[in-house]
Image (cartoon, rainbow, N blue to C red):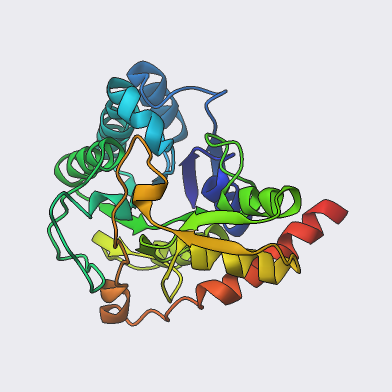
Length: 291
């Protein structure tokens, strides 16, 4: 199968290239061209004629989105629009990667996981721009799958962020006597390798629409950080603090756990617990270092 992957050298894109290596892949990075460049994208897609496009490209620096609102919408909304139109014009199916941050809007108190049927209300510019992209995909490409996931961590690191949360905590754990991390934001950490495997499974279905894909279980950032250091054998204490004690430019949802409801309806197996995925992250990370 011919598959075009945008953001192919990012955390998820790298794992997708590994998992889908038996297919005829066209991995695109920002060095090859920008999804915001319609002429480049249209020419590339029409020449390759993929059966599937997987769009992982996004502007994911959540705080910077508040200061660079136009750029966030240019990439996350109009870029997604370009990919959707290119897919529709060539008859390709589109798998578009979205986020839990389309939820958690102002004045909302949520204590149960969000399903694919809940109405998204974002609480920051990043979430707004990603939701706009989701809407473009839904309206402009008939054969689409919008995959909403959460707090991605992968061995390739998040290129746009210069690492990921796991690596940041490992560094701080070695440098500091203690670490302070917020404990009032709850979500489901997701290993990009597991997400890539599920996306590969979806290629074999004729399901179209929105689907939540996260590792099972939920935690706060403080609980996630504690487990990271525990798994690494680092004894630095992780002190819980509130979001008010750690102000950021962008507001984060206090609760953005996603229910993999649609996966159950489709008979897909639940992804492993995020703690088990984290252990595998360390194994894969060590293997890559040795290679």
